[in-house]
Structures are given as C-alpha cells and as structure tokens.
Image: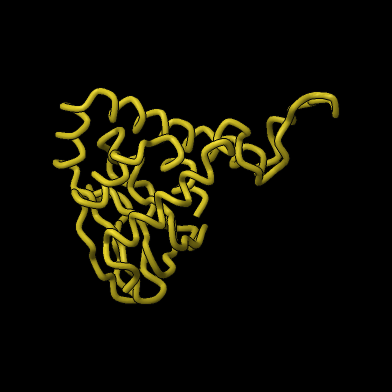
Length: 180
C-alpha cells in the first residue's frame, strides 16, 4: 500500500478521478504473468486486490505486492522494458492505465504532469534509499538530534498527505465498483 500512498498523496482529487475513469479494471488469474522481464509493456497498473510476486531471472522472487501497489512505473518513465517479472499469486484485480492515455494526459495537462512526475520521483527516491540501506551502504552517520526517519518510515513531507492518499484510494476503489 505504500506506493499508492506516496503517489496519490502527491496528486489532486481530480487527478485520481481521471486515473479511475481513464483506467480499465482487469481480472488477472492466479499464475498469470502480468509483466514479463525484458518485454515492453503498454500499461501502468495499480493492484486493487490480491497479491503478486516480483521475480528476477536467475534470482527468483524478490518481493510480494499487495493492494495499492503500482506496477510498471519505471517503464512508463523511461520507456525501457521492465527489469522484473510480476506474476499473480492468487486471483487479482488491477487498474490498467494505457501508456497512450497516460502520455496524452501528461502532454496536455502540465499541472497533472508536474504532480505525476513528482509523485513518481518521490517514490523512486524512497525506494532507492531503502534498497541502499538494505544492502548495508550509505550509513547516514546522522546524530540523534537530526530530523531523520527510521527504516521503513515514510518521508515527513509524504506523511502530510497520507490521509488524503488513503481517502483518494478508497474513492478510486468505489468509483471502480469496489473489489472483485
């Protein structure tokens, strides 16, 4: 749920309404590969219900995703094929937002584009910091007097909008007709 809170917290209510209206609900059967490592994708996905496994060739499963996770965001930003595969662990429901629809919105709505790119940048920055920390690098050396977040905590700027993001996600689910 963390991804969606970070991202929806940066967007406006009308942005979230647009996502819900422009996207398509898709059922994904257990075992189906939604995103395949190295193969181009045509949509950004929000996992509305269910669990998905993220895997890398030669390594196996590296993460499990649940409701609220956003998938395919890196490929939407840099147009490169995905660096991991994502497979439904059980029957899932996703919101698929086509690359074409998203690109058209980004090209025609500068304010949306600014909020969307900031949201993605904030999320990717948070994920990179977490990865570096898990690998044991980048000890901040910060003193206890400094305003530093603990491992797993959201950035203080993001926390300001978490309540809004949660409400926006709930409204999106209702707009889409709930789960399954």
